[in-house]
Length: 100
Image 1 (cartoon, rainbow, N blue to C red):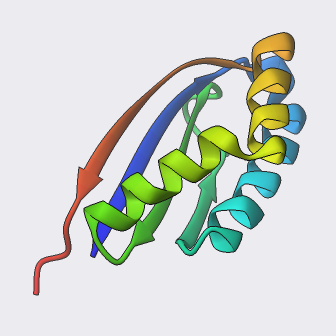
Image 2: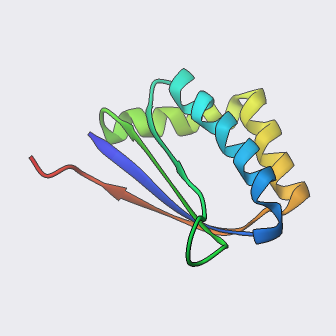
Image 3: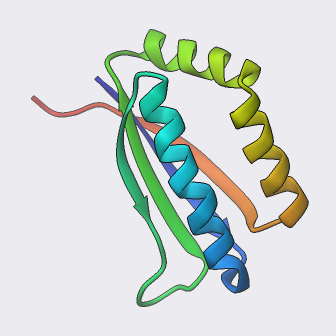
């Protein structure tokens, strides 16, 4: 299993827009064969940091998801929306493996 961990720096004045965007990505990842573990939005402390975690059986499955997402109309719409509204300032992606 490979788990993608994404740390987002978000516009704290647009958390509702980021939340709407995030809910849609949960559905997309699930539709494309991944297991989404959720988004984690600011509650206490920093008001501009959010995280998400989702997994695929292996790195090859994740890479297949990325290729499919690049061609998917819903994904393109979500990426366009995020760029237009600028509720994501930046993000960093890390890959983790479970300790078994």
